[in-house]
Amino acid sequence: MQYDKDIKGVHADIFKSVRKILLSYAQIKELKNENQTSYSDEYGVIVMMRSRKDMFVMAFGKGAQLQERYPMLQGSGKIVRHLYFRGMGDLDEKLLREMIEESFVLGMEKYEMQTLKNFLRDQ
Image (cartoon, rainbow, N blue to C red; front, side, top):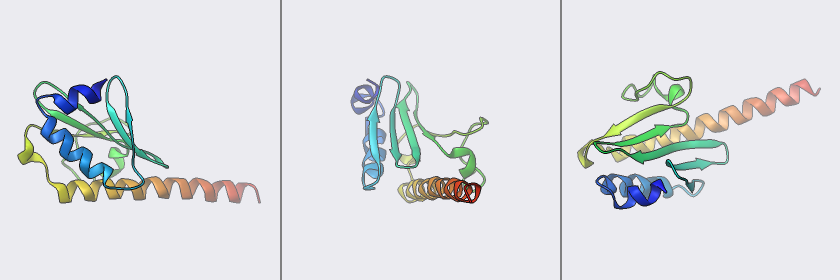
């Protein structure tokens, strides 16, 4: 499992720090699988993480929606954007918490909009 590699690997300090931040939110659930460790709430994926040889990667599940406000996010796909860490000095807890909390809001907004659309359709 990727979790086992990350918890003991070269970037274990970053992984453990980010994991601690994520799990400090009661609504976050952790899912460990072969390729990454992911963190989600009831509205969807917040973050997926994994180590590479030369860096630690965080992928935000709602990253494309976050990118305008947080231009340090990288990527050009339709949904996900990435943050890359090469050392603990790259980790800004306050900024990371802000991005996580904004992801919560985006997930809730999407859910509420869909609920409203369904309600209006059924009238």
